[in-house]
Every structure is written in structure tokens, then in C-alpha cells.
Length: 237
Image 1 (cartoon, rainbow, N blue to C red):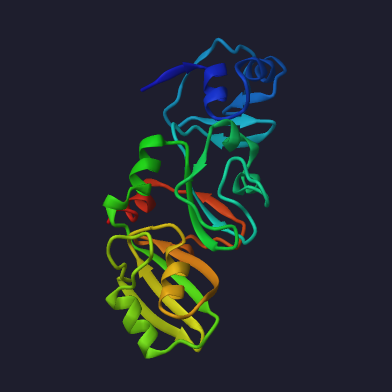
Image 2 (cartoon, rainbow, N blue to C red):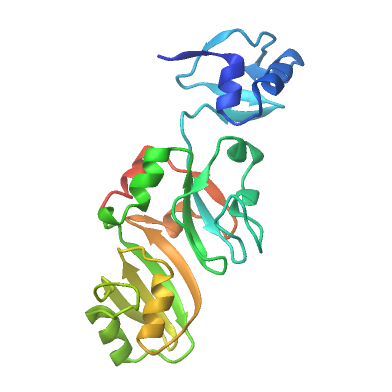
């Protein structure tokens, strides 16, 4: 059991500065179990705590783990330069909580993006040592050929890599569509591998990370959800 003062709890959940959180409480905008809280000094058990702020329910979470079905033309950056950042698709509380993307998808790449405020989780999921498979649907500029698939499975040499990079799996899904499974997570890897193999990627979508799929989450483009432990377990290789 962990007890914290109510203003600290609100601040930890991303509702703003300590001063602002205290004002929320004193103004009667915070309730627990339907009971208005009027003292920010009150200590509250965080286990299974559900807050009501401005009438909306928020479950207390020490850390948040989020899956987003990223649309195109959004940047995976806290300081985007040419397109809106993916954080604009989430409630403002997550910006205050310092939620960050786990790895990056190009601005024009769509699909599953993990986000969290848990530093060790972000580091572990981003590490190439984990060998977590990721599934991509890649539309190609030229028709898919058996030779293209053979090259991607055998490995293609990228100019800044010491050894060829190979797909774990590569299956043709249409005349100009491939499903590619990778585990390395190198910069622009799918696009660069296709270019090195003599084709070109015209659109890219990530549909799964490890055993966690967008289909199982039921997320439409631009939608997000919290990940619970059973879903996080699917990310372990």
C-alpha cells in the first residue's frame, strides 16, 4: 500500500504543477468515490485509486503504457519541426507526465507506436539486444518479384552497416505489397532494404510488435489505449 498527499497524486498523473493541482482541489474539482475532496494535504491510498477530475474518471497509474495507431504526417518527437507531434493525439496530461514514444516511426509511416513515461521500459523496448520482431506492411513502387523476396530474406547490404541485414520473414500480400518481419530496428530499415534490393517503398504500416497486434487492440487510425500487464507480456520476445 502506498499513500501520497492528494496534490502529489494529481501532479504525478499529469494534471499540472503542484500549485495548480492544489487549486483544483480547493475549488472542489476533484472527487474520490463521488466525494468532493477539499484538502490537498489529505493522504490517499493509491492502490486501485480512481480519481474524478472535472467529472471525468482517471485511474491512478504509477506509469502509463500506451499503444497508438499512428496516422500519417505526425512526427514521433516532443519537438516536431515540420508536422504535428504524436503527443497532440493524446490528452494533455501525458505531456505533463513526460510520456515519450518508444522508438520512432517516420512521419509518413502509420501503425503501432508504443509510448510511456517509464524510462527503463522505453530503454528496454528500444534496445536492439531484445530482438523483438516487428511486422510491417510495405507497399512497393514496382511489382513484387520472387527475386526481391529472396534478396530480403538472404540479406541486403546497407552502406552504413557492417553486415547485411535480413528479414525474419517476407511474404507477398499483393502485386505491390509485402509483409516484412524485422527484429533489428535500424533507421529507416524497411525503406532502405527495399531500395538496396532494387525496389522502392511507397507506403509503410507497422501492424504488430512482438505478439501484440493492432487488430487485437481494435484501434482505428489516430486512436490510443492503455496497455495492461497481459498485453505488455506480449512484447517480450
